[in-house]
Length: 106
Length: 208
Image 1: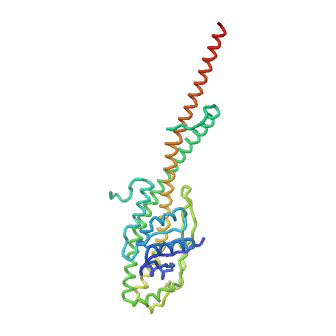
Image 2 (image 1 turned 180 degrees about the vertical axis):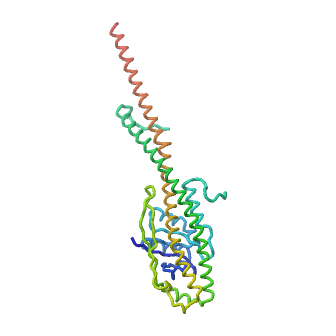
Image 3 (image 1 turned 90 degrees about the vertical axis):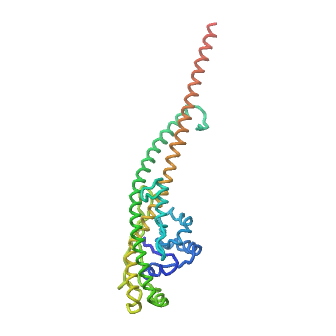
């Protein structure tokens, strides 16, 4: 199956991906991002979402974990990475294993 | 532990024994599944962590580069230059099974036309070319990250579900069945003893 890629985010950071060939959907806040995600979830298989929008939509994004597609993954926004991506991994690890085997910081 | 509400008959005993055997076997299988899933999960988790670290670092670099590119060009020029992309990123989507969980398997299909830039070289500065180039190079990595992070999340959910199943069998189902089986056995033995005593009583009455 041939799938499409999209990036949802705000600001200029996503424009560079537009030139690289990823469809861009500008979203200035989480409410707008949620709407967009709902709309494009069926048409796009790989969706990148900037971290500043992914964080408040955490619970909303959970529902996409039930099926293999679409794959929604957070990427750092223009302001640098906020550690959200690692947090996602950490949560998954705690859920599955109950112990910290990667980060060792608590 | 509460025992099941069944009639203490041989029929029920036989049924329950069969259920108990199935439950024990299922418990063992699920436990093995859980062990293997956790083993695979840790491997994928480590991979994802390194991949994410690399991607984030590279992406930060790209964004920084792009900011520089933007700052040296008027913003409307950048926007017009970037607004009509010539190539589109397409991915090949399939699923693969990791321990019975359907996880995505994504492959980036390269579709580059010309130099891959949506504008002529004269339109915009070299910094922009460079950042777009870098972003294109980064895409396979980002797609790989998307795939493995999704796998991690899906496996984590599945492991949790499986753990619940194992625990339900181990701490609820199996003790319940064991207790009920014991109860029926006791009851049947008791009935048997009662029957023997009754016979003996009848016998003594006969002699009198």
